Length: 324
Image 1: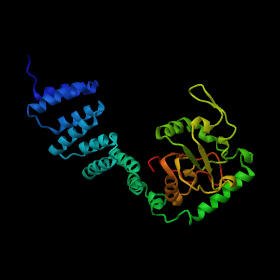
Image 2 (image 1 turned 60 degrees about the horizontal axis):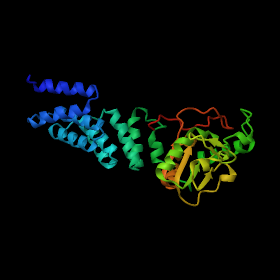
Image 3 (image 1 turned 90 degrees about the horizontal axis):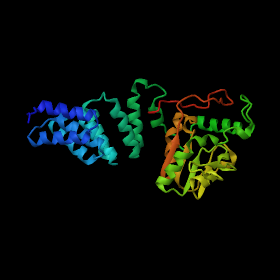
Image 4 (image 1 turned 135 degrees about the vertical axis):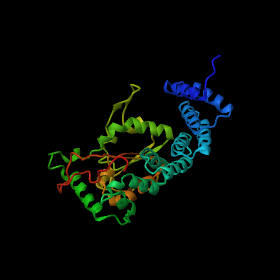
């Protein structure tokens, strides 16, 4: 049998990895380690292979072994990814933080760290990290404005109160610019783009009741029949989602202005946050999550709206990058 050198074995393992033969990769590299070969690149590649196989605990151990040899940002970053897959978000945050400490210029890790902070409900840390990612654009529109704002539900910004009046006018008078009748303005039907994703989240979390935060007029919940992917005809979204209760909240539309009196399993907020000024974003997000028992589903547009407010300004007053 032809003897294979260490370098040749590593090259074969790399070729197997590129051809997605991940199990062969682990077998080749395990043999090298058994023969006493210790190299951080070997453990890094082994970690990648285990990760691709879905064997995240083995991947974690491989990355840790590599870190013992060379304390590299790449190993810490990949270790963080493996922790995320296991739902160990605090461990992931620790690994990502070590990676960025070694190599501050690691954009992908910053984005992953934002995700880990968000899932771990460390909102302020997530926002602060977003600010670092966008540090080259730290002007009056930076995240620090949102983060440092002291406005609250009981003491919102003057802009918030002004917007309430403008949207109330649209609901009552209609859109005089587009000639759209009052009953059609923010009727609530834009949610139809997301009903399947919301249905899946409701099923995943076994949610029994739902709050639509910023529901528009709420017409989407009345006299709306639809056919699901199962070819079954449903009489309403409540029937389709199989929830016991749906509550609409919209501070700009009198029939739904009453603030929710309890918490709900799931809170949805579609096409809402971009309509709020940045100095109110933090307390509004805190309020949304405070009303949720299990989960939040939110969609946020990162582009200008087609509609103008009665004062001539674009309806989307906070337009930021997705990472924001």
